[in-house]
Image (cartoon, rainbow, N blue to C red; front, top):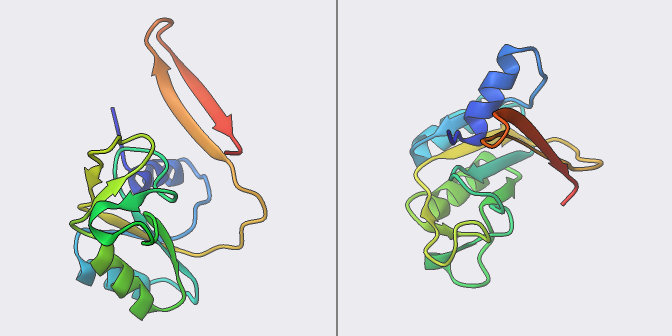
Length: 138
């Protein structure tokens, strides 16, 4: 089962895990509305595809110098501009291969000051039938 980041965060929140506020968006208008519900002044606009490496990924249609699939925005107007660039375009990451995946939804979150970043993944080990947890600093 693959779920998007915003879906995972909704599940974590149900069990009392603190997460930054955020809103999923299928359109530019929903991204802007979501940003307006957040305190700001820093926002993060995240492409929601079933692949890792989104921040370092590149959009096929935007050229090699374009920003990746996780972007900081310092205003609601920047959220709107990023949403326009990302929605409907193809994000290529190390996990998608050259074909990439089309971005059909975004997750707009409140920006937080990050002292140290970790990645955490949970998956079912089909051999043992147990859940495996993988953590990394990269």
